[in-house]
Length: 72
Image 1 (tube, one colour):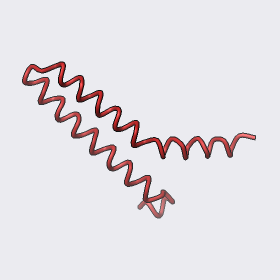
Image 2 (cartoon, rainbow, N blue to C red; image 1 turned 90 degrees about the vertical axis):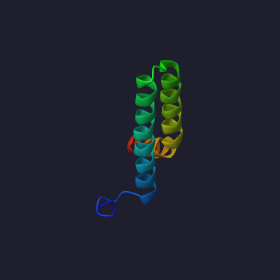
Image 3 (cartoon, rainbow, N blue to C red; image 1 turned 30 degrees about the vertical axis):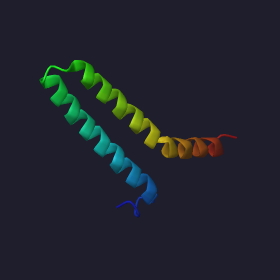
Image 4 (cartoon, one colour; image 1 turned 45 degrees about the horizontal axis):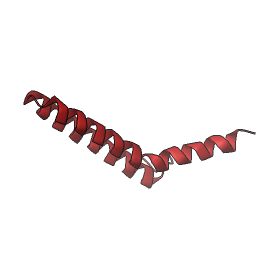
């Protein structure tokens, strides 16, 4: 499906990893909140967000390059 949509396999791999991180982060946060550890849950959420942003840098940079090529 990715080849038919002409999506680079590297970007697809990154998106799958980001999705996995988001699911695991949500699961761990829910466990912490259920056990009454809201502070730890907040730290896990923050760590997950930082990982997601760090992993999405190649996608963001390629989008910026495309935008700069479109603009005159």
